Image (cartoon, rainbow, N blue to C red; front, side):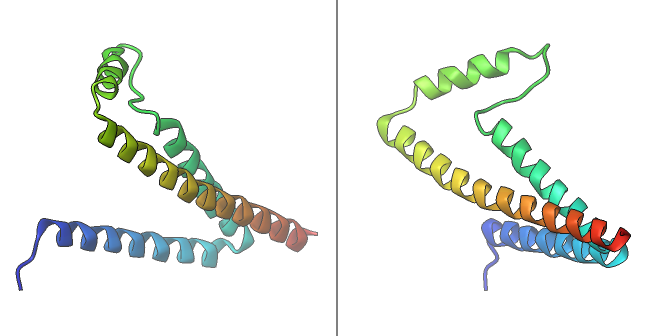
Length: 119
């Protein structure tokens, strides 16, 4: 069986997700509801960060040329390439909405559970 670069990337991504899941479970196991709330906040923060950077390069104030280069490349896109980009962005928005809602729910459940246990 021949191993391709794509297969290696998928395996690395799966290993990363597995490691993140194990760390989240350990974190929640150690801190209980507070850990669940913190995991939710981290997920929420990650989604917001990805949404901010979705429009393109977010760089340093001294590297203002990044945005100009990106705008020029977008204007030079063909119709098919622009349509594919819009379709990909629509799929990303749906996924980010789902993960953001999960992060909000975990934060609410973790915060409420922590407060109930403290009373």
